[in-house]
Length: 259
Image 1 (cartoon, helix red, strand yellow):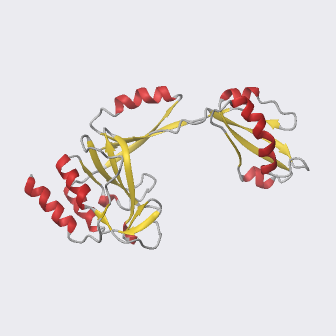
Image 2 (cartoon, helix red, strand yellow):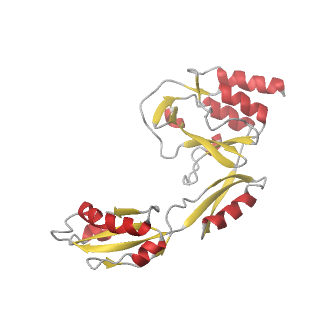
Image 3 (tube, one colour):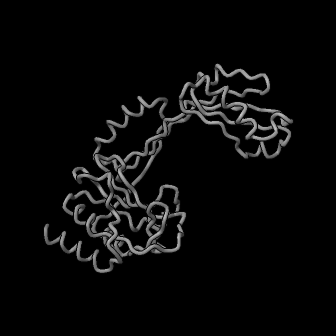
């Protein structure tokens, strides 16, 4: 095993550009129960970079890779839409990720692009191949998701779970006529903000104007989207606008599994 790990480190270190550790993160204090997963994005129906997929679970190999896999100098900030992603998980929970654009030989870190030796992916995929599948599951509450998540993370086939964003309970629309008072989305925002803040009492909420087909075609009005708690929908009374229906938020998790 020691010889195998040494060979991996040497092979990956032959074409390294600099001393920047690609897989190091302040979030990673120990590599116990850590996995390193390389995968193409689920939205890429052509599976462009499926050939680079890999999964590594051996702690000694992971420790070696964290110290040996590096990226190079800053380069032109270009991205591929169907990029490749390296994800570090701990106890099947996502800890850290970095995007790679293989066609551009780039790694993307903190919004910037750096040179990266794609042969690293080729070596890892040959030695630690991975095929995966994914599915979506909708939840009504965060408590329901947490119960499911606790059980699914225990399963050997689980790679990781992309958690829903539990910020708003739902949304509704308010339609305002375009006039001198409500002359722009900003004017409406300034009008609504103090009314809403009295009701929500510090809870998360948002007011937005979406340039959708309806708003673009009907320029004599502004339809605003309000996200927040259900009591905001119930208690907000405004004679200057037409209130739409309450739309509960959809909390959808994405579960990734080994095939």
